[in-house]
Image (tube, each protein chain N blue to C red):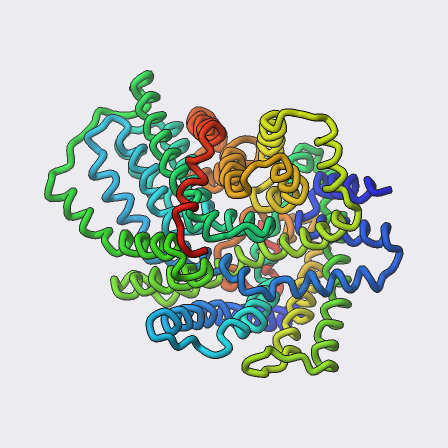
Amino acid sequence: MIALPFIALVVTLLLGVPIAFALAGTGIFGIYLLKGNWDIVLEVLKNALLFVADYNLTTIPMFILMAFFSSSSGLARDLYTAASNWLAHVRGGLAIATVFACAIFGAMSGASVAAAAVMAPLAMTNMRRLGYSEVLAAGSVSVGATLDILIPPSVPMVIYGLATQTSIGRLLVAGVIPGIILGILLALCILVWVTINPSHAPKAVRVPQAERWRSLWKIWPSLMLILIVLLLLYTGVATPTEVGALGAFMAGLIGVVMKRLTWHGALQALRETIRTSTMIFLIMIGANIFGYFMTLSRVPNHVVEAVMAMNLNRWVIIIGITVVYFLISMVMDEIPLLLITLPLTFPLVTSVGFDPIWFGVLSMMMVAMGLVFPPVGMIAFVVSATAKVDLVTVYRGTSVMIISIFIAIVLVMIFPELAVWLPTTMRGK
Amino acid sequence: MEKVLGRFEKWSTHVAVLSIFIMMILTTADAIGRYLFSFPLPGAYEVTEKYLMVIAVYLGASYTYRGGSTIRITLLVDRLPSRARMVLQVFAQVFSICYGFFLLVPAVECVLRAYSQKLTVSSPPLPLWPPFTAIPIGLLLMALFMLRDLPRVRSGGSALFREGGSSDVMAEDTSGEAGARP
């Protein structure tokens, strides 16, 4: 009987019912099935509706607003220009610049899809003009945008922290080193790719020294913003919510001072923030209802007991989870994926002695792969739509560059310190 | 009816946008006051979570729906013949409408409980029922828009199946053709 709501969830999801509504609907069905009492169902629903009245959750709209203000203020364009000017002398330099610009933009934005939407038209136009192949261009911007998930501020990290009661501040800081490593691996991947097949990138050109420095001068407000955000998070001086609000305020202020953020742009950024945040919260409300059913059914406990009874090596468990995450992420976006799977995987992973922060970073890297992998790949969709490039071309590019994410996952698995060391040096939360 | 719905949605979205903006300013001012001047803004924390968050999320719900921001798994549906796909889309639309209207019951109960028990935030002692009123209003608007879109599923005009969403739903004509874009 307990299996029925799970089956109903899979069926409704496959039939195309919105994930938020499918989770809630089957959760309501499950709770009624177990308790047989509408009063209990209504009480759960009331709690689920008021679940958004939580200060910690305000981190999500604030990080998203920071991303949209940064984008409306044209900060991404400056970053891209500076990166491309400094790397133009390397073959494939513009693709590497795209990756680095995505990484730096990631430090001002909490949403990888926003980074893809901002960077794709910019980077693709420039790379097309200079004769880069569409495959390399689309691959670099798509996989580059996934760095946003790891580099703080990151909305999926916040959601992981909220769903597992793990310190959000430490989680965000934990993503820094793996994010930098992934950025370097992506750059190396591009270099190797264009060395093996030079037809993907034209011969390098050298940008005059004066122009390089001029472009670098333009990005100082962005670098200042990033520095302040990272410092506040690292030192624990302010809570992640306050960091988000301060970051959004500063991004908006930079835009106003530089006379780039118009009234219309600011309003649009606020509306987009409402839309993205509410979409996330509707899914979280659904996951909250379904999560209550899962707790009542004790399914997570049964799963942990069953897996423990198998006496499997803990690495077999984590590799199994990685594969399952990768497979699910091929058909589901990162936020519902995390919210649906964490109640099952998190107790399992922590019960075999893995670090919750390490698993958080690993989960982000796993969902990053799914974001650019067929058939769903939300970032691939965004790049295809915003840069007017064929989806199959995007996937051809990402299928090569995804090797870097895979290597980064293996590195973080072998050397957990890459993820857990930096948070241990923090003083605050 | 369309015009009234559109006008309500416009105002509810404006209030949601304003809430997000105030949230940013209030949290920033509170943080600066606390860390630089040892003077946190009284009530900033509770007003943010109990008032601004609730208002922003629920009054933004219909705007979110109309923007095509509902995430679905389309792996199977996209591969079906158009007739079968249509049947499943109608099913998904009806499922969503039922859920939307069903949620109104606990939403109204939240307001009534806050009102009858005189629930307040602790400091300042502001009543909780006014922000909680945003919950049934926002959900009702979303449910009504979903209901309005039911006959539009056939023509592909339902916002539930709009991929990625429009960048500016507010700019759309709310006089009747809002959801009927190709």
